[in-house]
Amino acid sequence: MLDGAVAVVTGGSRGIGRAVAETLARSGARVVVGYHSQAEAAQEVVDGITAAGGVAVAHRADLRERAQADALIGAAQARFGRVDILVNNAGRTMDGLLLRMRDDDWSEVLRADLDGAFFCLRAAARPMLRQRSGRIVNIASVAGLVGNAGQANYSAAKAGLIGLTRAAAAELGSRQVTVNAVAPGWIETDMTAAVPAAVRESVLGRVPLGRLGRPEDVAQAVLFLASPGAAYITGTVLVVDGGLTMAG
Image (tube, rainbow, N blue to C red; front, side):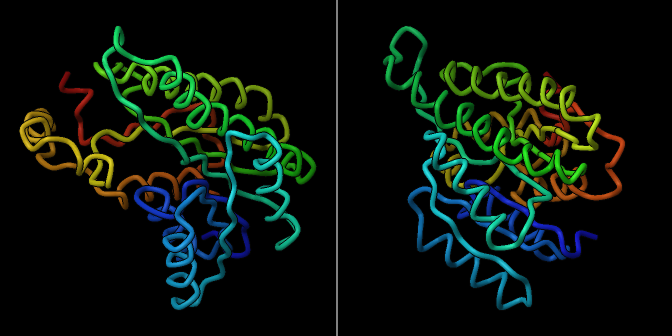
């Protein structure tokens, strides 16, 4: 499906990013696994892809810094000669009630979750426009659609990412570069594993499909949007939440 394509996956060392990197590689893409601090985990992803017959490399980048985002995309071009797919997955949470949230906690999440995605999107758009082809998939969140108490910074960042997705789709579409977002709900990752059991059970009771999502559920949505079959889809948000937001 993606034979020969070059994909850059940020935050690719664990959770959703890892599942995306592995899924794209199984579909034939050559993958650059971007990471910030989890060097060993990123190398495990690369080793697993390589052992399965795929092609992958790891690249460290602090995407809060524009120069490092540029360097990540540049490294993919230098190694493989092109960039066909960008998956903006890197981000973090620093939760807290609005009135108690420190300024630094607000700024840090916006920098990591929104600024970094913007820097990478802009850097990847340049070669994609020259190629007259490309797929950009931003990993947003249902928190960016409906908000989430205790996550004003995260909700704002993800809502901003959805706005960025639509603006970029409008600007890049004439060169056949699509830009879409995937908005996961509650997914079984390290982040959600730290949530108290009572909260998890409460959320699970509102999911019509009766289970939390798996990283692979999100990865399959990304694969579709990155594939030739999604060539006429741009500026959309694909919600992967088991029906949580539908249920209210």
